[in-house]
Length: 297
Image (cartoon, rainbow, N blue to C red; front, side, top):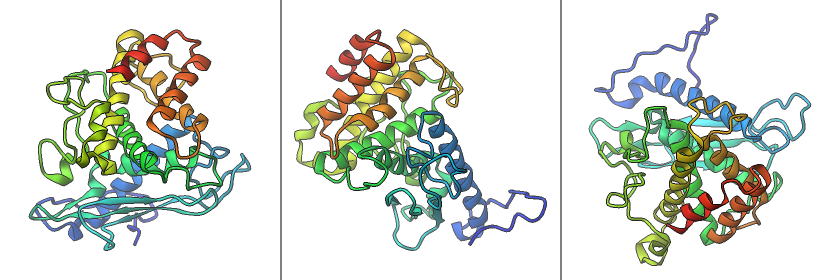
């Protein structure tokens, strides 16, 4: 049920985190609405637009198919301690299911955790861009599912980076909903290898056959790349400014265009090679050594 914002469009509702989430479902819904719109607008700047199969009810005759806006279901009863995103082909409505995390008392609502909302929205972006807008089955192989989780964590890192951020920060996914300092991942996202020792070899560990765990390896590589690019090309705090040549913006361009270029159901090496090829198109090899160094760590 959508909150009633009235004729004045006031998106203000009570929020008391000491109470059970049902008491503030309207506030949680507004927060999910806000972050889904932020995600739409930022990804649009990196060419996840109508032609590329983005999520809009009305495409305003700019290409692609209408009627596929994201339906975000807050405090969904389908599950607990998780969140999910359903991505059909272009022209069919996508769904984001935001569950309650019940390990805490009171329970915690994923609709209040921006890191989770961006992660889930990112699944839709990666799925629509890989293999074309009419095919939503191009991230279904074992390695592709792992990559899908990694891209979504990377988006969550990128969106929340600020001018005060450093490569040694301990970035988390789901810290709020998990009610823990480390959040939902095995390690913090940081370039400090003492705190995040992930390398390609971790993919051989049985516990890393699970997509979220192995996705951390890919996201760690992308986080390394992000910071290596910031070191050499600077940082742009306005993530909407896709015209910038700062390191964080270029990294997002490499990743987003790599999705378009890679094959259906890519491997880790396919995804890496697509990003490297995109760099040569966008920046003509200027940062090729930076990319190879980041992926070699």
